[in-house]
Length: 268
Image 1 (spheres, helix red, strand yellow):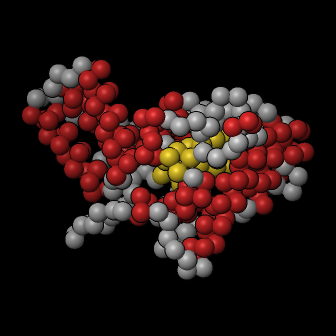
Image 2 (tube, one colour):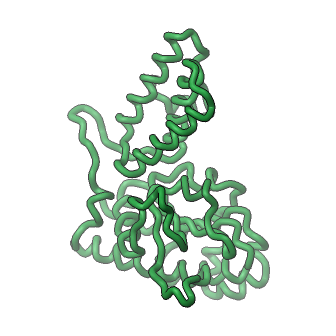
Image 3 (cartoon, rainbow, N blue to C red):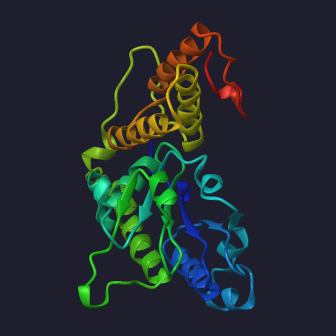
């Protein structure tokens, strides 16, 4: 499968300056990245945004606007988040912009992926960070470490385009952390979307509630499980093992069957 730039979605969260949105659109158009998602932006289609998007109004007009980061990421198979500081509990997840680009380009051969940027003043929230499988930061000078949002979009857009060119030209593939996946002799191996993973964790949470876990114990356990899966990866048939386990627990203790929107996606 060939990597696809159209499978790479840039996500701007709670952008407060419309000119940054327009400038980001222009940077994306320069690098051949057509897909933008905006989470609760301020005046995304105002005159100031359009002036800065000069020549890239089509990217701005197509931008998808959502109200929550879960809506922005639910159909993506991998998400990377930009950060200006190292997250101690997620040291393993930190990659350079070049490594991040190689990882996203490699995943893009299988399905849609995302790169998320936080608000100009405070960056990504902890909840948004926890959504991301990978974290990435630009190694700037300590004397003035912050980047303008559109500058950051251009840095990553350039690295993504270069990684795509190297890959499509037959160059080396991305880092091992993006390529390691289990195989199965009788089943296809597909990376689940974030929505599918969230459904699995909610199914496990229902089973844990049914057998007496406290809310604190349940949430702590599932947080560590999420981090383990982000670190090691998980594919669709492995995910179904957890669904079968949770279903058996609920059936055994006589608890109601787990249901959710798109419940047909849960293999019974």
